[in-house]
Amino acid sequence: MRVSISNDNGILIKYRNMRIALDPCKAIDTDLVFVSHAHIDHAHPQKDDTQVLASKETTLLAKERGIDIGRTKQELEGFELIDSGHILGSRSLLIDGKILYTGDLATRPRAFLNKGKSTKCDILIIESTYGKNSFHFPPLAKLLDEVNRLVSDLFSRGIPVVLMGYPLGKAQILSYLFSSWDPIYVHESVQRMNYAYSKLGIKLRDFIPYQEAVEKDLLKRRPWILISTMWSGRTNFIKSLKKRYNAVTIAFSGWSMEPNYKYAMSFDYAFPLSDHCDFDELIKFVKECEPKKVYTVHGFSSELASYLKRLGYDATSLLSSQKSLDELF
Ligand SMILES: [Zn+2]
Image (tube, rainbow, N blue to C red):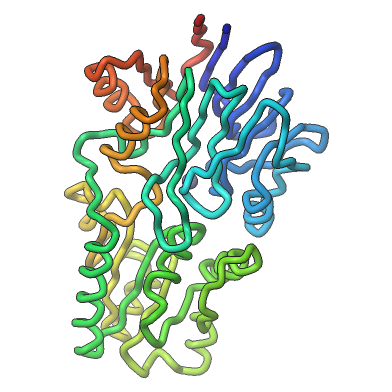
């Protein structure tokens, strides 16, 4: 088969006279657009007449964020949408049973999310956000135990806690995993996405919005938890929470494995709870797919491709400006 793959406006695949755009960064004239999930770096408005493949959840979550990705369908002959475990509704795309594009991928189950599924393919296009051999995330149970012990210690001293993560995806996981604490308030951006998740069948506790807690003067009754979007410790918002209530911030991101992350962002604590695969999980996923050719995209794509080559794979990093790589099998 002859396939042409390029990475310009998202990844463009030419396969059997069809031009397929994977997570294009802007509207594109093509036969088919695939939107893997509703994060704003992946979901963009498309023209009315563009054929768009995306899950129902991705379409609705994008709409909640003010992005109309067009008239989407969830099924098309020759294409299979597979759970990628990254956020609610995130999907990988299997083209003709041969080419697998992972989109953002997480293969460890978290809260209400199942693991991203691998499948046998000839060509694998895999994300490599944490594709460097220093990103090894701890088991979820161990991380949860550590965080709960920390919160317990802070609560026993009457210290409020701000749990921070991206408003779509991570914040809902935090809302689920830490829901047994009380009281919990939520930042408005998190509340909106929690509500959208609830509409899609993920029942999250109905927390009091932060603004309402401020208006009712609830914050002076300490301790409490606020689930919030990520704020650097240098923002006025966090500075004022610290000054008024002595609040402590805990951030959740895979990047917290980087030595300087916590200090660069001025977080009090940071834990590697990620919505992506760590290095070992990426390698395991590749092995399970048994591909003849691997393309790595995003993040540490060169590092992952080099490592895969050492394991004997035909692997290439697809950098963002790269055009038209022709492959013949
Ligand atoms: Zn994402």
